[in-house]
Length: 332
Image 1: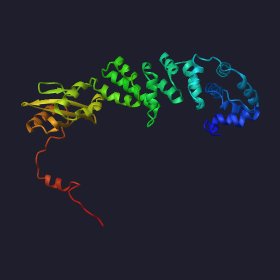
Image 2: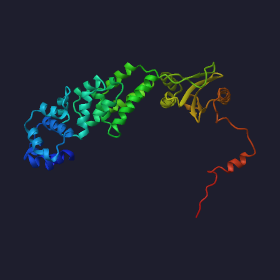
Image 3: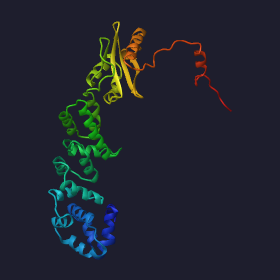
Image 4: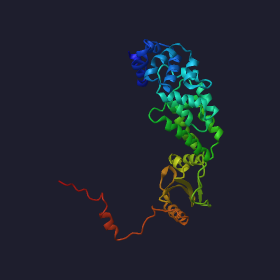
């Protein structure tokens, strides 16, 4: 009984409440049959569920016909490798859409890479089929890549396949070598390796055009490798901004003044570039003379510098008293 219950409801309804009522013993024989026999029969029933007056005839046909005959009756033109692929679904029958999706993918494949991947998959289910169809470019469609994406159980694996395709396209648009990135992705062996791959390859990207032009005093950082090098030189955490810089949301530069230097962090917000901060080695504050010169330089090129000190005013007394943290009231 437990073996019966492990199969999906759509199949059990057809077997126990349908065909077995008119062809006694059919359900038990099928559930004890080989994996291939079970999946071939399920593939037929998924697309040709019999009506009440067909139960006896279909039961007799499915009990006696060979596997190829059953598939030809269900699908007319049986694509190469369809029967072998069905056997790799395993002992658990899938939802009905899995079988029609497998057929459609092999009969009208998106690419030859997808067909080759299905032929080499050690196990097949609907989720893996969808991943294989979603991945782009097709050169990424490899069994190990599909399995790694399917193994990301904490998220929607099909959506993750779209993310992988999008990330590949974006990195290539930012100057990463497509063939080298393809080779790296196709060599991954686990979901952890797949997730760790992207941060390494981001460092090979070329950054979008820097908003401040280069001068003798100012130099925009133009690629990930330069950012990594300067992060080591300044011994700071600027490399954590790699992704927003590649995305064009942030920018980094280096400003030189009177023998000193500082890394400059810019951020694009509300349609304008703004200075987020300037940092010397180990994130130490730069000398005040460097900061003041830097502020003028950035403002001259349209960057908003919100950190520039205001002129002192008597109104500062009122401003300090109206700060929300100044008083600590307790109300009964």
